[in-house]
Length: 112
Image (cartoon, rainbow, N blue to C red; front, side, top):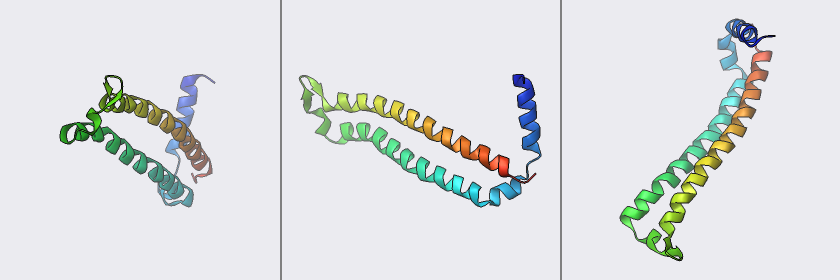
C-alpha cells in the first residue's frame, strides 16, 4: 500500500474512534500514569541539573577549583550538560517508542 493510502486509511480509522470512551478506559489512564511517572522526574532532573551550573558559578566558588590541570569543575559540569541532554533525548526516544506501542494497542481495542 502506498504511503498516502496508508495515511488516509489511518485517518479514517482514527476519525471513527470513540475518544470519549478511550479517555475513560483503564488502559488509557494507565498510559497517562506511566507517562507522568516518566516525564515529571526527568523534567525536574533536567531543570535542576541545567540551572545548577549558573547558580553555582554565580553564588559560590565550588566549581572554580581545578579538576584536571587548568580545567576547572565548571568546564566539566558544562560538558556534562551536553552529555546529559543527549542521554535524556535517547532515553526519551526509547520510552516514547513504548508509549506509541501502547497507544496503538489502545486504538486497536477501542470502541468505534
